[in-house]
Amino acid sequence: MVSSTVNVVRYTALFSGIAYGWYHRRSLQASHDQHKLEVAAHSREKLIAEAKEAWKRKNEATDSNLVTDPEDPRFDLEKLIAKWEKST
Image: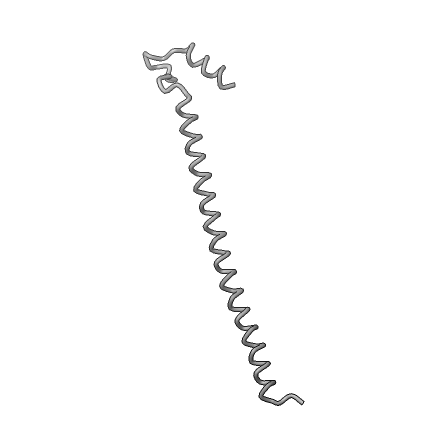
C-alpha cells in the first residue's frame, strides 16, 4: 500500500511538471513568434531596398538630357523616337 504522503508528492510533481511545461511552451512560442516578425520585417526592408536600387538603375539608364516637350527649343524628335524604339 502506498501512503497518502507519497501520492501527494507524486501528484504535486505531476501537476508541477505540467504547469512548467505549459509555461515553457508559451515562452518558447512567444520568442518564436517574435523571431518570425523580425524576419518578416527584415525581408520587407530588403525587398524595399532592392526595389529602390532597381528604380535608381532604371532611372539612371534613361537619358536624363532627353527633352520630351515639343515646345522646348532643345527638343529632338530623332532622339525621342530612338528612345521609344529601344524601350520596345
